[in-house]
Image 1 (tube, rainbow, N blue to C red):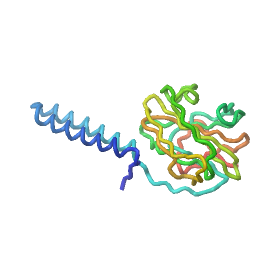
Image 2 (spheres, rainbow, N blue to C red):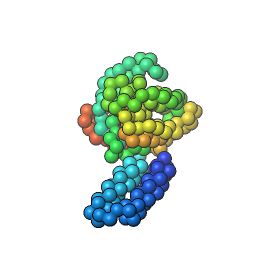
Image 3 (cartoon, rainbow, N blue to C red):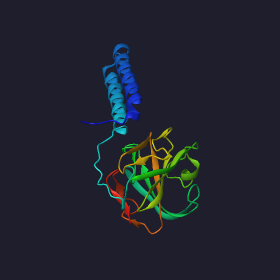
Image 4 (cartoon, helix red, strand yellow):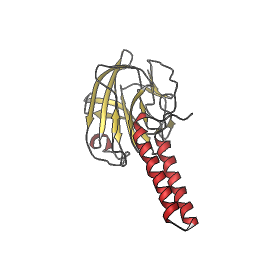
Length: 218
């Protein structure tokens, strides 16, 4: 059975209401059979896209404090040393994962630990792969700490289509690797900032599976 994320319940309900109304209007007010069928197919396609976007497949995470797992599904687009200026204010290893509209958009905790920092930043809606998206787009920054890695930061970044980031991380909470950390609606990316010297298990262009795939380790 397909499960859907709770953040999509309202949008899914509205989509079904609009779709049913549009189909009924087309059948009652359009007398051209082929046009009615075309409209119905387009509406059905739109409904399927919305349902796919909000799906929330069950993932089984092999909990391991020495592993950093992919927080989202998507494609690895950045692996480099950068200056992280918001929280650490020093050099970190950045791994960025880009999500297209067809990817699962559930954000999952990359490791277990305690939430040390959680902050929302309003901003622009540049395309998610834009170099300035990490610092200028709507985003949330969350820091998790455990005894093995110390502190890591992940950043949910809105893309050109994303208009709302949902973040469940609250400072002081103890969280479990692989569990639901939030959701980004309609296209986006997530950046991970890890300690220098962390072993990276992925390469540029790799497609990763959130909550399951190990992207880095001690």
